[in-house]
Length: 226
Image (cartoon, rainbow, N blue to C red; front, side):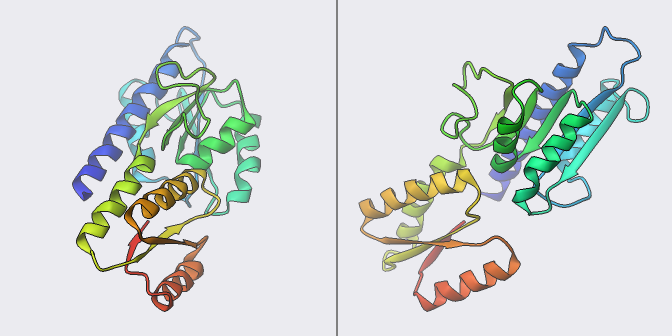
């Protein structure tokens, strides 16, 4: 599973890189223009390996920081209420394209701009309302879809096979992430089919995670999906 996940992430990063480069190259006739790529992350500095791949790939295509490229990175640092302000900041510096990673960042960008191109990695973008369809996204958002939403009910089926005597399972989520909330609804449906109980445990930080695991122990949770 780890190898498959690594392959998905690597493919997503490379595809995002290609799409971003294409958006920049499309306007290459403007000689002397300095392009600004916004990078919006739900995490903390420094830039993650995925962003470093983006930087290296753009350099190979002739887009070099300090010459014709500026990467404007903004970090939410786990405080989702900062999204609106950081997106507004990126728009103020007139970025040519914004790269984001994850559903909450994509949702914040959808609300903030209908014109600046956005390249993102999310779960099911159609179900989340980010695009009209995969074939014809429409609007200003494109990128890579990692279909983890549909895989979580299957994970519950596999977990039940491994633990046939367990009757209660837990789902650890960050409640302000629309993608995992969609998964929760699917898990509830799958649980009813299997005749088991699903319990949701919300966590926004490290302290919440510790409390969630303590609650799982108290409530006799037999297995966990995250």
